Image (cartoon, rainbow, N blue to C red; front, top):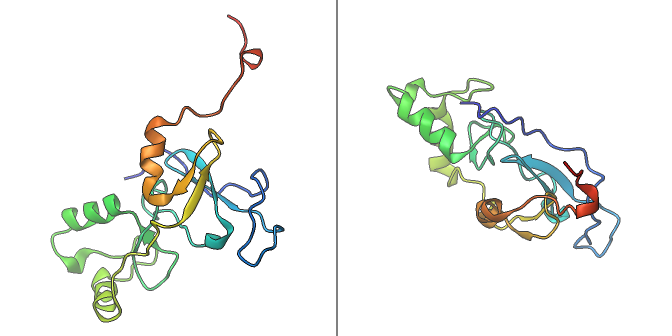
Length: 156
């Protein structure tokens, strides 16, 4: 299931300073690599985003077990459900907690989805787009990456 893209969080430091809701401009945004792109995450959402524990490329929006850091993206969750003969065969890929226990928790306490659509991101590939997670894929389709002037491109 690994897409071949290693998407580990990027060390903070290269992004612009974002004003914190308290009014302080001292906190820097978190940087994370998702779908091969590096993003600044608004400081109000720092620590909220997690990558899928299966593909390590998609945004984990569904809890895989009781551990809030064990998350799955929708395509990986769908594949796990589709490939398993029954729900008893599905477990968290990291700690092996049976998914039926997690499903029971979701039934008691609400949806397994972590609402990530309103998380604000800025694309560090082009430095020209800021928007919501729900609009990230649309931006990826049109992003041209870094703006490189002609003096930086070697002549052939």
